[in-house]
Length: 162
Image 1 (cartoon, rainbow, N blue to C red):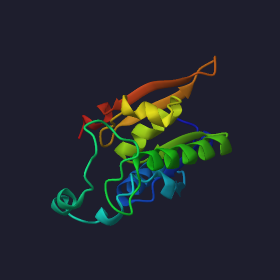
Image 2: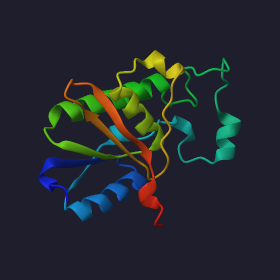
Image 3: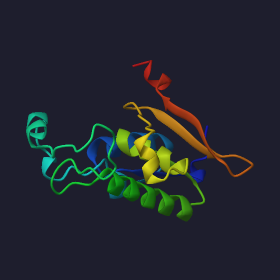
Image 4: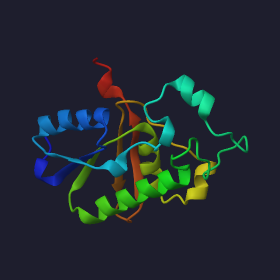
């Protein structure tokens, strides 16, 4: 059993991530701290629209490769803005807590949390990507040499009983 005094739970304030955190928080008897900066990428005008609407209204891409400054929809974030938002949030949370952080968020956000943890510069996202499955667990640690470790990534074994 874990010592709940050693942990703090943060969650995106969007429904699924928040509900997941509340289930975990309930089991561990921990309050969930909502954090809007842990949301998925802001799609601007596409928020709440159908996939068909998004297909018809997405801004044209200017290249075949990943463009960190591409803005999918008017009023939305570029991938660089999204990455900077996630990095700023994680730096703030990590530097303000002496506790272990439990974070419930979204797949794209989790990929950017891992990139932040591994020290990626935004341009490095053009050649590398982390994709986390729904309901997966990842563990990030610091070793004795103060290196950032991705100890577990995208583990879904706890879902096999469902």
